[in-house]
Image 1: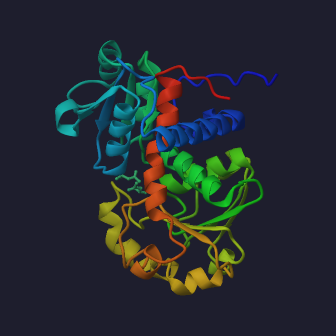
Image 2: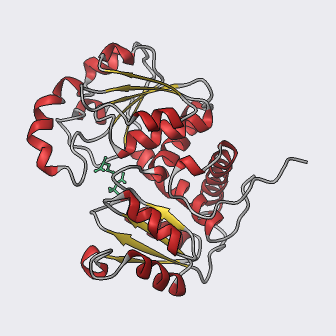
Image 3: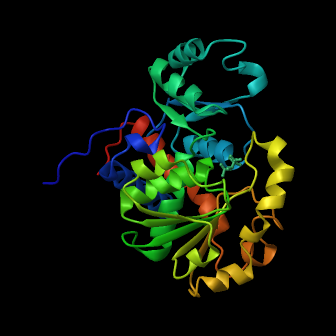
Length: 312
Ligand code: CP
Ligand code: NVA
């Protein structure tokens, strides 16, 4: 008999998720996706449960995939705009967390300051899920790894190159996630945009950090994200000057030497900046299946955190 995998109480950062828990979530995502594909629906395991969706920044994928994920599992989700809640301004984070905990069964939040999600989790008595902070985007990384697993049939030993702003939230979570599943990472960024060395040190992945685009040679996955993340708009002009050599275009895809390389992007994309149309819509792109997998990966999180479905 295999040992029981300890349950998660929140999903704030991958630093606090073990490799076996991460694998458990991937397997549950696969199971829920297969169930829906086979039967056209999932069992209503979250009937009567509700999730607050607290946003301090814009969103398409995160908002809709969490909302639909709850609906598909028989539960209910409601959106709270920055104007309504004024997290930490109209009301303290501790008070928001304690009030929401009495109304609903989980809180998903997208914040600027990562410390705000940490505080929410400290004060809430229901599970808290990080829907992106300035530091990390663990739901994205879970869905991304799920997509790679689905497409390539394995994870151990694969190499992912992240080209662009290696200091951003998506890169940080990919570095952490790769370490859970035995993948190698190459972060290829202009000078000044390398990942936080603490993130690299905390990951179990073999991480190479370089400014050299030759680092894409032989990789299995070529990943990029916007050059200017939400909240960094004042740096946009400077970033537009620095990042163009790091565009994911046909030439860079060819430099991987891998005809089957998976091209990924968390979206939204600034087409013509970090990725060209030819690549985003080309034969190697999995951008839309990747976006769609946010739904399935997060349903696993919801089933586990709100529905007490065990990880196996
Ligand atoms: N990838 C992602 O999180 O997209 P949104 O910002 O639209 O939620
Ligand atoms: N790095 C991007 C990701 C958006 C999903 C941002 O933070 O804006």
